[in-house]
Image 1 (cartoon, rainbow, N blue to C red):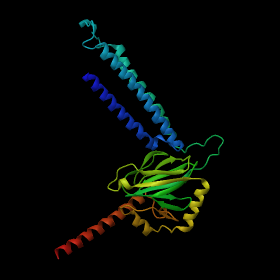
Image 2 (image 1 turned 45 degrees about the vertical axis):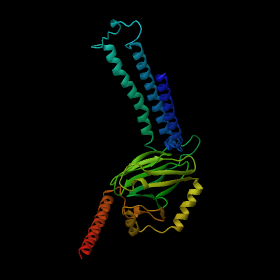
Image 3 (image 1 turned 180 degrees about the horizontal axis):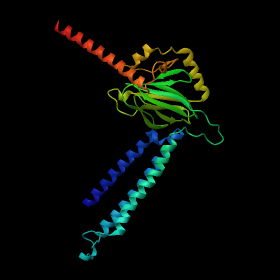
Image 4 (image 1 turned 60 degrees about the horizontal axis):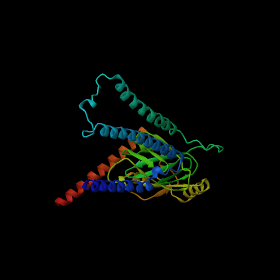
Length: 313
């Protein structure tokens, strides 16, 4: 009676845990893809999960069979019933060598092919003309995002607009700490690193507002280094670009240097880009950042010295 009650409690607990996990899946963006890149990654995730679930089922089935067949208190048990001969057994050695190799191959092939596919712009749907990718330079600085549109000669801070059904070619770099651009609904993350440039292709097939963030920890402002992605029609995007070009101020070098200082800031937009002054993906860009941070450090030391002198007075 006691064992039945204990078993019932474990069944209820397991059911509750499963219910919690399933209820949380609704809010997982990577399981609700909104573009071809996210769709390919979603297919790879689901394939891997089902494949690994199959392995788990086989392993636990064999495990259950063994503990029942060779249990200590089984009926008509004899000491001679279990006499394994594993030492030098070539058949068993082949099995436990070949099976892991097959598992690795079946997981590696779709993973590698998907990774290579994602290194180029998404292909258009059949019967639709191919579109040139929209180039956006995504630059990070503690703890904000700069999105430069060189073709449109505009720049936004902490938000961006993109046309749907058109590939987006993000050119990623950083003015300081290593970060990573991640828009879960549109695809996986890629790193932003100072002095170099990485490329990430994404695309939105549905209009909407998607969450983006830095997925690589870089200090106290990490949690707030987020942005919104507005996916809209081509005409709405062009109208937005026109408004920024005509209504927003130019991004001066002085203003950009102020924005580079560590700290959080609100969304903003400009009718020119910081690429006119510096490209942080180059060696000169790294030197520019080092110079700026040296100046800030010297200013801080100067202010600390003044405060110290005032305290002694």
